Image 1 (cartoon, rainbow, N blue to C red):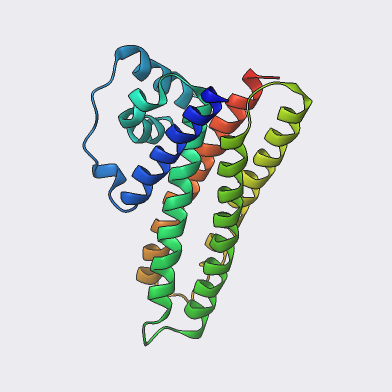
Image 2 (image 1 turned 45 degrees about the vertical axis):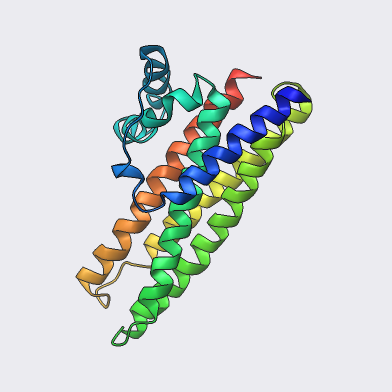
Length: 203
């Protein structure tokens, strides 16, 4: 019980720190970390589709992650969750601007709805991953749920981007929204890869 309590405290600290830096995580001051912890992050990130982005993003948390695949996956999910939430808020603000074309306003509504679903799925994934330990049939079912939810979140991101296609949407508007969604999609994709790596290591 003591070990579980300590782990939950660590996860809570990470969540609070990430939430405080929603829009500036890439500019955060890197922390000092050991070569072993950095190598763990680099090796883990090689399993993702964006290894460079993954390493740059998570190497700053290397000491807190301490070579733990579970903490790395939880950190990745937390950052994807916070980035998705920030992107959704920015789209809601953008949707209130005057002068939007009907097609642009409709695309924003789709994105807000899809990313809202993604937020719920990532939140559920963080909660389940933070509460339970590795090993056993229960663990496999839980990881299967998490993998399903994160995959669904990634599909939500793709659906949002699909709605931005078409000649009727202003190029500058499309670029502005797509840039935010691509960032969300990349972090969600990284999260899924790291979750899969953690699940595979405890089959």
